[in-house]
Length: 168
Picture 1: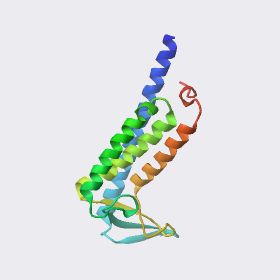
Picture 2 (picture 1 turned 120 degrees about the vertical axis):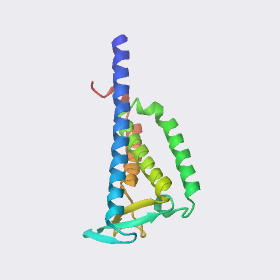
Picture 3 (picture 1 turned 30 degrees about the vertical axis):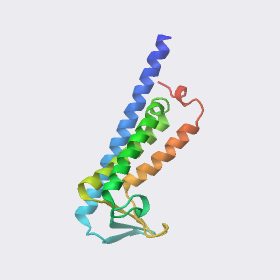
């Protein structure tokens, strides 16, 4: 019984480390990419990369896909409330499933990246601009982390017995 409990604690600790590492990776990559974009492109400027993809400096004062523009205080409060709810909801799941731990880390890292933009710059810097994307909407690495993280959380939650499948 003690060996099983030790193994469970080791696995839980490793999964929390994964959470933290992926949150930090997404956050840092997002902030560095936005720093580069703000330093090299003027607002509204666009550079064609390959067919169907441009890098365009766009300032997004709303939330996903530009909803709620010009309401930075409300958006920041909503982000903090959503992050708190996500943290409470995922706290027990992160320690039980490695895929959920990675997904939750990516989601939290991306959310914190966009929140920091709102607090420091008054808006989020978006720059990945696919030409075939619906509407005229650009996004950033934080948005990618949030979306991929949410998908990984769903995949992890759909797995049966995820807590016992990871080897030491």
